[in-house]
Amino acid sequence: MKLLDCPVIGKRPISEFDYLGEVRVPPSQADELVWADYVFNRKGAPGVLRERWYHRPTGRWFVFDRDTLTDEIVAVVDAADVRYEEPRYEIPA
Figure 1 (spheres, rainbow, N blue to C red):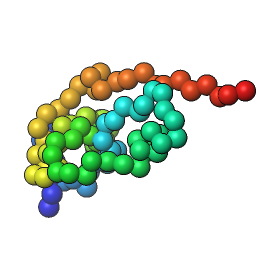
Figure 2: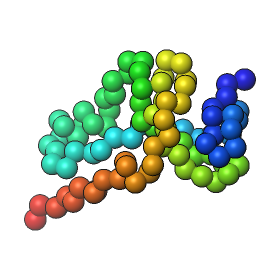
Figure 3: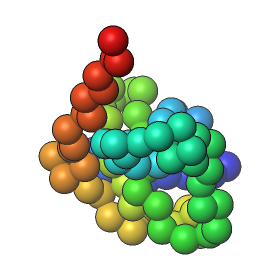
Figure 4: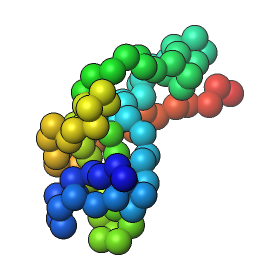
């Protein structure tokens, strides 16, 4: 069974967690090519990624720096450290 280290209650089965993807900042000014690259392309190489996870039993959200090769949680990141302003898009008249 694959385990993930919950910062609140310790090692738990990964089936208790929902993976919500890599933390990425959307481009603030983007044409169609830049936006398509942001939406559809990822690095894909093994390494440390900053990811969002939700732990259902505790009802808590976490941001982890996780090594995708070993599944080791390298760091628990404060959610305030990954906040960003949402880009404002103006609809052309």
